[in-house]
Image 1 (cartoon, one colour):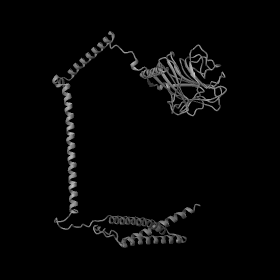
Image 2 (image 1 turned 180 degrees about the horizontal axis):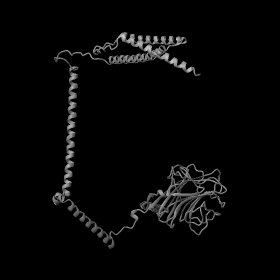
Image 3 (image 1 turned 90 degrees about the vertical axis):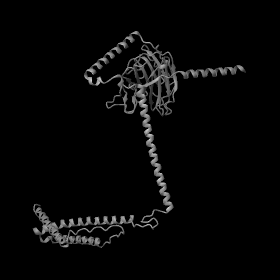
Image 4 (image 1 turned 120 degrees about the vertical axis):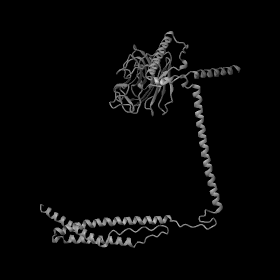
Length: 505
């Protein structure tokens, strides 16, 4: 019974040791490379191009994606980076969507890292005999093995042709059987090449999470050529799917500093001579500038000595003293304000205690006399005065508008009378006169209302000074008659003009 227990303990110890060793390894440093990435929104520019990328065939860029091929038969499209990849280690995350109406689709989509930019060709929309890496998302089952959709990786040195009959199964470096068509969310594939190790993770798009990856394949001792290009291509055949590339996110991977070879701390003789020569040149330049300054400003240099410069220790002590002095002044100011607040509180408390003990404050000549009651104006009385003033102002404005109307009509009547009217104009004249009489009655009624309205009496509000009487009754009637005459004349003139105008019709 002891041997199984010992074997289990040994397995557990080995597993824990593996975890410790794996966790002790430092992860590579990542840096986002925007010149080798694209994502929405505003992916396509006004001219239809995508920054740092070129595409052709059936590929079409929009605001938030690149449709590599539409769901039409026998279409091919491709997207390639314009710049060469300068970093040796990288991680590329491809977010795409493959959708179609049928249960089976064709042909598939490919991710490339190769030394040349492939154009339209038979291998998932790109050319064959490439030099580099190809990651293929194969939708159609050419070999009738019922093993599609399938994801596979393949290396090529430029001498191999892709075997379509076997769907590349005999040429693959590794792969996995995963369905990536018609998913509710975009499908994700992450390809990492770090220290000659190629790893492929896959997210099947069943959830919206971007962290739900599973390992598809891993291969070591993989040597990829340097200075390659990243690309995406797709193709359709007798069946057709929409192949949409939503995002291509590229990160360069850098080896951590702890894994880099440590220098021995010494420099070569050539570097030492170089640094010494640069120091001598800068020192000679400094001395020349000092001499030029002494020649240009002798009066400023004469009084300067070594004793005029402040010692670093003295400067530190001075700064400490100034800081402490400022803190001391701030504390004194705070103490003063606290004393003021305490004094105010004491005065307030004493006032409240005196009011409570005496029952209120007394006003008058003697301390024991009865308090004098001062009659003050109340709020509602002030409101009554203000409302009365508003009513008076409104009535004055109404009277002014009526008087102006009467003045205009009087001028018109005066013009008609001055030029002479016909017999048929008597009815218009009577109507105008009746209207003037009604307006005068309204004016008289408003004036009588204002004169008969009682004024509010307030006990403490001072009387308003009487306004001087600027207009007497005689002047008022005179101006009224004058306005009536002017209105009648204007009406007569207007009528004459209308009669003269009718002669031409």
